[in-house]
Amino acid sequence: MVHHARPDETPGRPLPFLPGDRVLRAAILSVGAAVAAVAVLGLYLTGGLAAASPEPRPPGTELRNVLYRITPHEAGPASDDVEGAVVRVLADVELHGSDLPVPVFDIGSTMDVRLLPGDHRVKHPDLTLTRHPEGATTRLQPHMPEEALLSWPLPEGVSPDEVDTVRITVHQTEKLTTTGGAGFFWTSVAGSTVGTVDLPLGEG
Image (cartoon, rainbow, N blue to C red; front, top):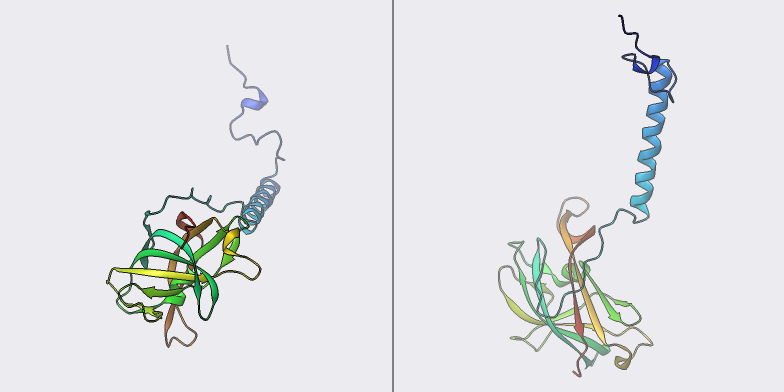
């Protein structure tokens, strides 16, 4: 007996929800792929595909990217003759990803530092080497482990009594060439976090 295939078993038959014309099917599939790509792009731009922030680690945890490593140990309030009230962080730091000195500004720009509670962001720390406490250091020398104090001015309207934690997040870095190619600088890579450390604010 000859078995006659049912229409839905016929080889090469298009899926029942797509038209039979090949050109029209290809057009529909192309539109569908484009819509999916736009949806993925929308998720990316709104942060829907961003990597989840890592859980904060305790003091003494090393945070390392391709440029430097930093191990924050403790934080406390202090007073600065120029900046006024500041928070200071004692940390071990080493520049390992460059054979040339790197500005402290570049290093600070690859950190996200928040004062909690209140989520107050502070930027661009001053860095003082404990072996040379007389003045701030503007550049880190390569391949030289250092103990350092990093300090950030308190935001306007925020007192030390309102801060109980300093949260330091380090991002991955990349080296970019300046306009004209005369120099370079280091900056953070968007969406890339290597780690976070929470430091309870001591008494200074």
